[in-house]
Image 1 (tube, one colour):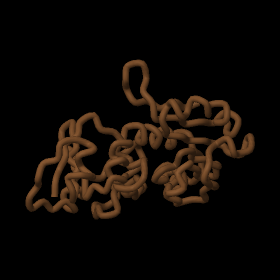
Image 2 (tube, one colour; image 1 turned 45 degrees about the vertical axis):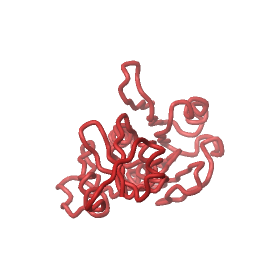
Image 3 (cartoon, helix red, strand yellow; image 1 turned 180 degrees about the vertical axis):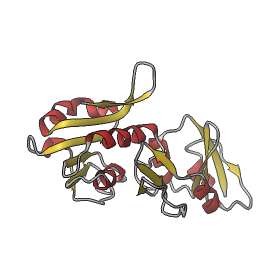
Image 4 (tube, helix red, strand yellow; image 1 turned 90 degrees about the vertical axis):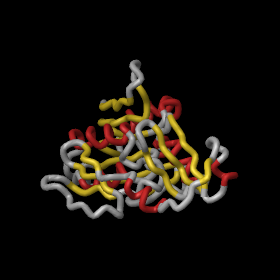
Length: 217
């Protein structure tokens, strides 16, 4: 077994590591360690070093403690056994799945905005749904109809789902559209977001100061 240490990581890098076959990921102060069975797979991310007697499953589990997000959510991996705090809803997501683990600031900003914007019975479209975390959150917030879409056919499907994007949706079909995707990808989609829903929650990009941000329109 080998490990490669990475700095300046984000959710997209984490996803690439899982796709490359990492055995597990642990997070330190400003870095992550990714474990691989073979040095060849690890070498595409950095210089691998040999590891002896590491319980990678336990270390990966320890790397994803439960999170309190906003005023309502308790984000927890499936293996966590801590009780849900009073007044919060348990949002279970596997951090080894698709994009949207709950540990990236943009995902947290979306969840916080959804708390404020979504009302019971609302219809919600989750564009670029990835792990489905925002779709699950919408249901927990009482949305009456939630639909997800992604150009990746392997995206998880906790709600009705189609392969594609917002341009395939009729005008005014939803009360709220939420999207947590790359700014370069999102830019050409802005008109469709406005066409499809009267309320929009958009994240996945940085402001002028370099801070991750979320726009609520």
